[in-house]
Length: 400
Image 1 (cartoon, rainbow, N blue to C red):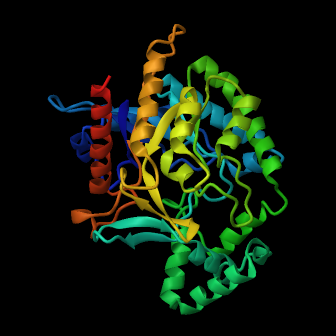
Image 2: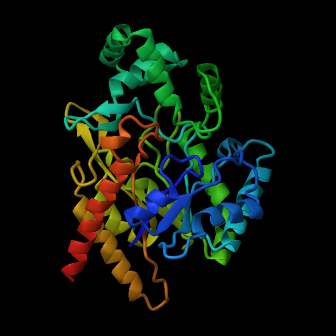
């Protein structure tokens, strides 16, 4: 497997020098300063690539191998009039990346918000901090802070009452923090500023959009992108919806194995693949990650390796656990990925390809606790996760 590490660019608190010391060889990055929908210029890609790949003599080289992500414009997801320009721009960005030798692209088709957590600094018994999703807090936000129109239809009477108690127990500062935590998952939040009114307007765009309509729009997008990706040798790796279920009145369409089967039955192109985000998929108890790793092995171009621990009394609530200590059998997942790599090496069609993996969200711990970090992307916690996963890979590989 190819050990990779996500780098958010020159302003990332975890520097390329830090990453080199982890032993990772490949970089996962993106041009975060380019507004969604605009073409990534060849010059800008080469400049970013130069930052990553220019290495002082005597130091281990790094390679920008995976893009995470080229954002998909909301007009594409909504199939609005005039959205073709954004499809063309997405394809142009992909072509420019391929010209620079970067041919694995992670992307998602989540409406409005890329990920949702209620706590960005949830204290663990160890004293370290993790990301957490608390269903009751989320309901309190949806019903009583956001006051989304029609939200009460998504909750039972008991859930509404519990959310009300939770809301009333919060201080004004806690309500503000909860709002900021949830809005942090908006695409572009690293560079743009959003408020509740903006959020409500963005959600309202999807008021009459069903899962079937959103899926149809994804397929229409991919039907144009995939033929060009095949010619370029580019592998597209769709990321699951996070959390993988409908929420905030938004449809979600990449949540389960059944969703992936629908995707690949409709668009069987070899360039059409997935990012196996173990933590995201496993926040649903009905997703069997080792089985999914085996079933979709040929489609896995990239994998985020982390786990979650779900609340036994409320399975929709979870926190992000240590990479090997969660509700997932991570060792079996890694074993399936190694088995897929072995199969590829013996493929007579020459489809041999290592799977890019990266330690996903790590705990904020030790010297990182008092540092300002991107949520989930502190250095030491991910280093711990990478070391643990590397040990599993070495041990399993030695058994062959």
